Amino acid sequence: MNMSTVAIDFSGVKKSFGDKLIVNDLSFSVARGECFGLLGPNGAGKSTIARMLLGMISPDVGEITVLDEPVPSRARAARVRVGVVPQFDNLENEFTVLENLLVFGRYFGMSARKIEAVAPSLLEFARLEAKADVRVSKLSGGMKRRLTLARALINDPHLLVMDEPTTGLDPHARHLIWERLRVLLARGKTILLTTHFMEEAERLCDRLCVLESGCKIAEGKPDALIDEHIGCNVLEIYGGDLHQLQELIRPYARHIEVSGETLFCYAQYPEQVCVHLRGRAGLRVLQRPPNLEDVFLRLTGREMEK
Image (cartoon, rainbow, N blue to C red; front, side):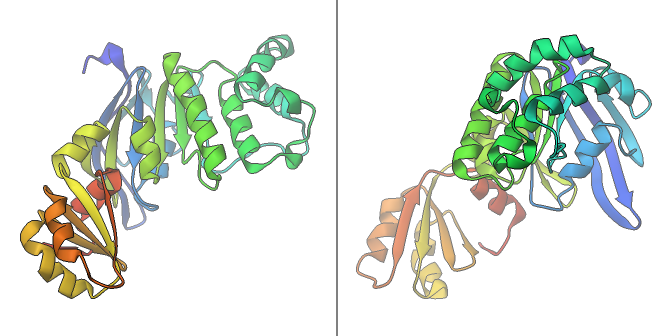
């Protein structure tokens, strides 16, 4: 990838805390203008990666470049062109919505006049124009998250780093954040998104890196990963004797996975499986296309029966 087109470059990065290895020989590049996802469960190293690229902590091994600046040595220069949405809101609760923007803009050396000039468009973007004079403590969780996003845009950044941006939000608020992020991508912004929501990664990311225990286990476009690692229909089977069901459908399945009390059957011809399940009491069967969660289960091999 030509460096003039690269927003973020990680090369052979390792990071440990004490004797615990958090990020293990990680390499990836993010192109300017794309949404790149770091996808993995809690503890996979996503937040540590975000903190390293912001220069908040240093890698033990490896090199990091952000917007053509080496990090952490030139992190301050890079941060001028970066907006950050942290995992947990750190807004000033006793300030109004507008006052939060005014205070944050000062961190970037912006004059009050310039902040006041851009604030209305940011509030409109976040759909908070009617809440400008409302204290943050009075806002809903979804409104606070949208304000945090608006605040991250105060300096018109080239790159947005978003750490678990929709954690704790209800579905309506989550979809509204997704819609706002699509607008930013259409404007040419680059987004690094850390998430453990498979649906979020599938909906937003142009490419993603799947992580487990600090290691990259897959990288690519969501559709390509789904096709490469699954490439067939999925049947979710609930109820009944799981061991008995596995033996019954094994000849018609590409592979079978068990998660909790659910049997996942991956089959090229799901109708053959359904024929052998008909008439069995207490069974519920859901047939659907494959998704990223299936990819993650397949790659990590959790509770898999081959």
